[in-house]
Length: 110
Length: 117
Image 1 (cartoon, chains in turn yellow, orange):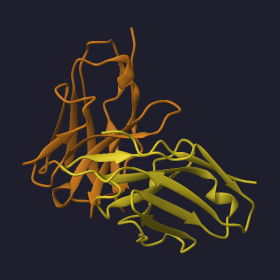
Image 2: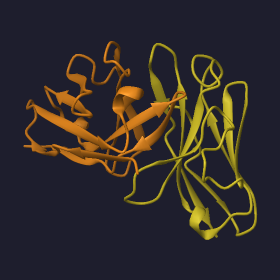
Image 3: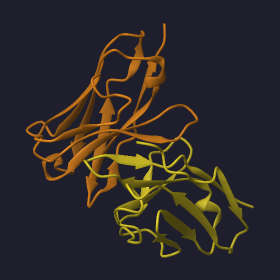
Image 4: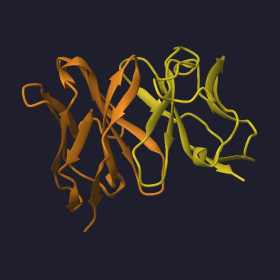
């Protein structure tokens, strides 16, 4: 049950695109198409932004997209806006009814 | 509107016990798997435990296995987490979350547990 690996920080200017990676193993990210991404603003609960690698829940802007290659999943935020500044966490199902999260990435909009 | 409201957090001495509750409204917990996820101060999210929709299956992170017990009362639409043998490293905000398609799509606002003497 090791945490998934995310870069601690990422940044971009308004209007730019930024991609956050999430690296696991063949037992979690690489083994299942059940990777999710969450946005968390300070003092708030996490919000689901992407599920099943690339699907967006209703109400999430299409500026947010997800993908996966092998044991690494990625979240891309296009057309960065000030309100996108937050912490982002990936999560993956790891089999046997176990889930694992990444350590989180602080996204700064410059 | 879906609401999950956690309660029961507080200050507990090491070795003590506490039970957290998560009351749901606008959302039937019997239709979903439910999990507890925690976040230590200034740290990331950590999955703690899950129970399936009818309560027949439970799972735990290694760090809490044998000390924590997840349960649910579908009639009361409430999720619980019984925590025993608490340690300082269990200090965190505890969130309850409902899952669908292996993703946590509904979250409560969390309740803070502090384990300290």
